[in-house]
Image 1 (cartoon, rainbow, N blue to C red):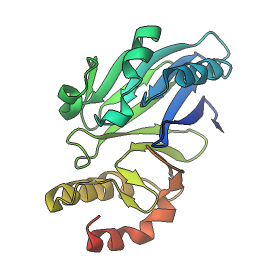
Image 2: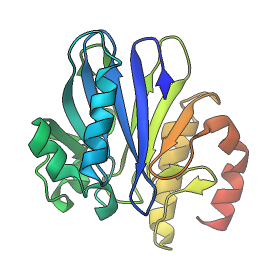
Image 3: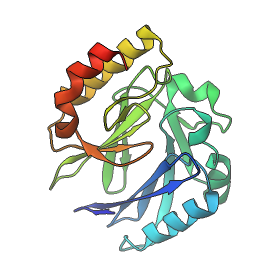
Image 4: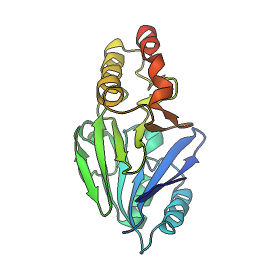
Length: 212
């Protein structure tokens, strides 16, 4: 858990694929954003309830963002949306591949304003055409990046051995993330443990040369 100035970030791991589900709760307003309703709806509902304790007022799930359309990131989406009435968001190029209707198609650079915090969408094309990362800028600390399956400790996401897809994703990750944000930026990936841009930056040339 990250207890920040204006928000609290909680996470759980679900499914046999170790999918990370993230919840951001605005402390002063109770506004919540869930990132990747990957699986295990009961566990996600418990996460949402636990996040409610981080707010000074009653909380409300405002949005469920899907970082990309792959099946392992959307298995609980229908159940969570049905139970909470939350709106949905995903990268515009992935919308057609997600069975649950998307209320907010995200383009690169879009900023969502919630009561008490903002999230910026960054398009990272390659793992899927519409993969997005989300940026939360903590006023009192490092930036937090939620990268889905586009950036992990040790490399970029799977691009199926396609050199064009790899080049697209690698270029976006370098230009839109590493060239914009400081080394203390915290990366919250779609699977596994977090990392920082500073920990990964020395390996960029290696990633480029190996092609994955």
